[in-house]
Length: 377
Image (cartoon, rainbow, N blue to C red; front, side, top):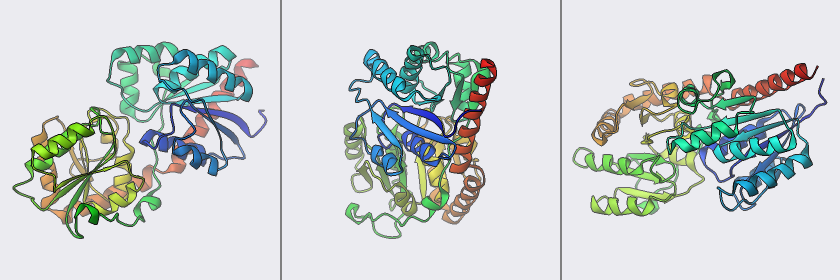
């Protein structure tokens, strides 16, 4: 019998407010403190926004300030020192860099109870898959955010299928659904005007340009509709240029990074997701929690959430014209779109709570620790 609370080290690449990072914070803050004593180790810096949220919840946070993501030697060395200091019963890692560095550091200090967190079906190069497979082979389990990610991890990353476990994200439905609509008067958008929301990082994976192009194709049939993009990233300049080229400066608006995602969802009539690959997009869960229909490409994790023609529309190809046609259906029948949103809200309320996600992690950690105890005996 282990002494409680059980010490668990939770290692993440960084604590900027992305979807995976926010879900990590929900997990750590939701743990039963009578059973678990969490310490967060971030490879990032003290200045990252989610650090204070964890500390305000009474969670110890140690930031390693690894300045270059590929400073693997430095990251592993610093992380190993923290693990020696903490002497945790279990290590949970989260995201690619933390998975790699965490497993290597655990090997240095002889920690055998480690679990990785795989958040996306990574398609940016097979070398990343090879590196993660090689470095994390000692992990007891790999927690995948969706069945699609587990399948990808088995078929493309070559991970041991017996170690793959699916624990889906959760969402605080009341926290999202009760938000007041954001004020978009600075963007010269008046009340009652239809607004589509696109939320994410402005990078090739998320493909914000397709959302801009799709709105351009709606110019003739729905000239009153606006598109609001919330997020930052390396494609911002290219997105701004394309908006200007298409003459959409009065209808497409870049908000930058915002903290009021629920308020934006409360103001919009639907969410657009144009990603080429994902894991289980938190923003889709949040849109459904807000009672908003979703128009999305078919990417990992979305089919678990959005039922085509029931809670939104799924686009099975990368053609902008297909995306635009789905958005037109949403705008043409707003009453039906509202019904879709209500169905989606019921689905996430019943199936995707934060409490269910946290319970899933706690139960898995207990199984891993029990297996180790049985093996030691």
